[in-house]
Image (cartoon, rainbow, N blue to C red; front, side, top):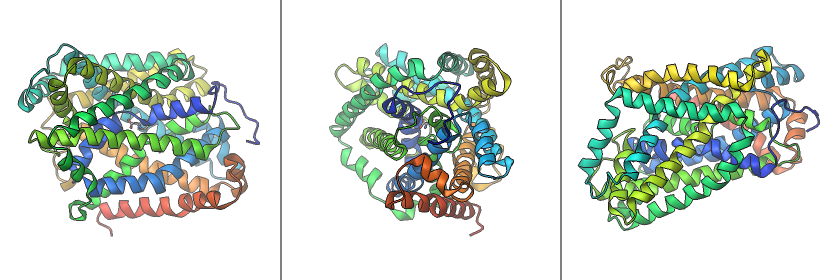
Length: 460
Ligand code: PHE
């Protein structure tokens, strides 16, 4: 607030524009593709409960911290951390937080884009009426046909990367603001339609029970880490995406209110997706733990049997692509902003460069589903015994890099940064709300992350 810094990349037109952009970043494949399948793999209710708890006590406070750091520094995460560290008399090494985030962004986008490619492919499959009348078996074989062909996956991955870089090269606030304003509500309505279908599918009760009745015996230390990692992943925290978006936030916007609004919307979308998918799983005798293909093997059954299913199906996958698109943009924005700031590159040039690097990394994921599907590099470690390269990348980023990033953000904001600085930037007074925030960031986040890490590694 008091720094008077302005961002060289521009600013969101209003608080609402920021909420839309941050929601666009948060709501994505994480909510609709990943949340249901990891909830399914980790036993349902208890997992969901831990995830919700993590959103409330870690996610929201860390989101506020990231937005606050971003707005105070008003640069790419690397330079923001450098500037703030100097200002707060902390070690210059804090800029490494920005570097790690940039690397995390590349790695995440490399597999994110491949999965978004599946959604693109399904726009056409749904629209052509391919799913009409199909049973679970038919739908399953369509999915395995798609992922078994590397050329096809590569083509869709390429298209999605080009789409992402086109928007990034034009600057985030331009097309993005308008797109999100329209598409987010549409996605929401369509999810409601799907929940409506699931209601009548015959498996609704069983689906809800699976999702919301916690059975503590089904949760493992690794499951707790996955739930916590997902809280970071789904809210786009721990790697600088929300920080860089915060750097474009107008001075007078309330950081607390916007962070809470974004987190609530994100959580609602995930829960709706779960409520649409699990009833279909149970009504059709499918397994909730069937893995990364879950939504591609369940929702088409619904579209194949409802009136106007080809249309709704196509619309759903279009919206899913958009949700993924607005998230993908935020994954590279920290890197692109940094290249523009430090190397004088144009946005276009920086985007092309970032796009090529990510595209190449993406090959690892493409091949994980076909020619390298039997390659399990860490199979000697029991929790990784059937992890392909794709699954390892997902695990490394979501469950290790993001929580570690979140831990460091917590330490910087609540231990290194002077209290006057955070109070000034958050501008919420020094009452209960501020003290609660600071307590959560100062104690709860670090302790929780460290305990969960130690627990998984078997140290405690
Ligand atoms: N939050 C996004 C999703 O749920 C993914 C993401 C992670 C985006 C980290 C940016 C940073 O799909």
